[in-house]
Amino acid sequence: MPTLDPGIGEKFSRRTKRAINHDGSFNVRRRGGPHRHDPYQWLIQMDWYPFIGLVVVFFTVLNVAFALAFMALGLEDLPGVAAPHDGVQDFLSALFFSIQTFTSVGYGHVYPGTNATGFLSSVEALVGVLTFALATGLLYGRFSRPTARIHFSRTAIISRRADGTPCLQFRIANQRNNILIDLQARVLLKTTDPATNDQTYALLPLERDAISFFPLSWTIVHDITPDSPLHGLLPIDYERLDVEIIIQLKAYDDTFAQDVHARNSYTHDEIEWYRRFIRAYEVGDDGIAVVDLDMVHQTEALAVTV
Image (tube, rainbow, N blue to C red):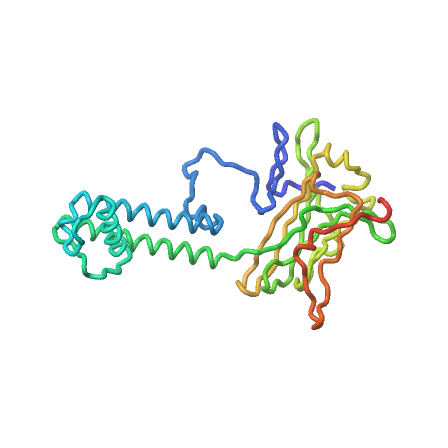
């Protein structure tokens, strides 16, 4: 039976892209309103490599700007600077003094010799303190923000049980070594009316919608019984209805001591038919279970089609 809109929307003038991307983000853009940009959220949520690169670029640009300002005042106003050699060496001398001032290192052999350079170095010291305070806050926010690293299988599959009952399956595993407790899963079916582009949602009952512990992989299963909204649908129907399987996970993280969430979805072209998952863990020689995260995605053909 269709459920109420979970917050993704029902009425649209044209067919939309998938609701949820594999990274858990929603395909929604905002425009208008008084606050369109939130630099803090952007800096907290961006990937680590771009974040570190942005910090390095910001640090470099500021120090280059101050170095040029010191050169404009004249290096003779900075006692202790080596006698000018050429433009490059003069710039490097000013840059190194700028970095020492910015970071409050202050080796002492170069110092402001006039009121102008003293004022400029004071401004740079203040900018340096504020910059490092901001960077420290962002680093703390990024490290302390609770996140779940759930490894989803690349595709969902249509398989069958031993008694012949067809079922929808996908598999997850924890990428971290932390402990997740009381992991709960909620799966929705989103379909689109080809004539009106209206979207409807239905809750897919699961074989198990929660587990107490999550040390291994978990194959989440929805049986396609006559009561299922997927009953009787063929691959061509999945494409016609623009089927999307939406997953929401919630667990208690023992490391962060609070709940963490994960989201994902599978579109109709990310569902494999007549397949089954290959077991993703084995027991080592020392008797310890070993989870192979690469095997989470591996499937094989069924002996007989559904």
